[in-house]
Image (tube, rainbow, N blue to C red; front, side, top):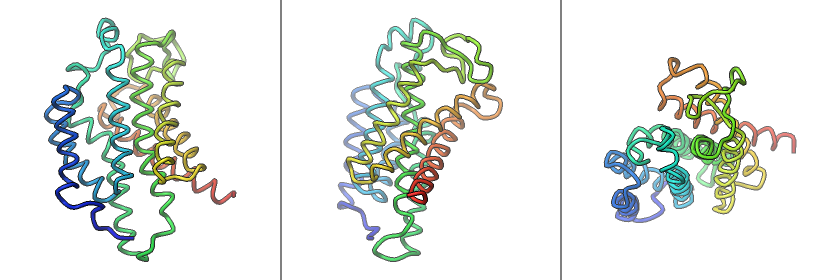
Length: 252
């Protein structure tokens, strides 16, 4: 397996610059997100190829769509994402860092292993896609729950709490989060990164990562800042996705 970029350098860096500039011009991201997102996107394209980059792009488009969905109604409730829903550099680092670390680990293992590939390849791709599935699940649960949730409860006490409470969940939000994790898993399958069993593992692993983040968040943010919780969510989603796939392959 060749670690060379899947495209010339001008395209490896040019594609993230063009797409990031478009997102900035459309008001979807802040300038800080553009400055952080371009090198992140280039690194994912370099290490993960076009398939890895499209997973990242799919997550971004999905997250942007659900954040902007019903924004006025969420703003009226006082729970809308700040600055018009435009994400900043902290969101890039928290939601994309784990996936990039997985690709870095994959690159190291490829260098150490055979040129034709490594046995851990399916697990690493499950971890990579699973990190974004967890991030998409978390974002969707929050945004859909705040907009459509009829009853919001704390996972820790199972008692009703106000909409927007850290760690709170609703049935509508949870269903949305499960769908989001599934969509990222299916995207990984369509792009040839995951087998069908990998799609299932990523869907479950990403959703469970979201649930665990909500449970930790229900104890308050004293344990971790919000960005730290989001990063932990992606790490757990990546780990669970890989672990579930490993168990499925062993049992199969």
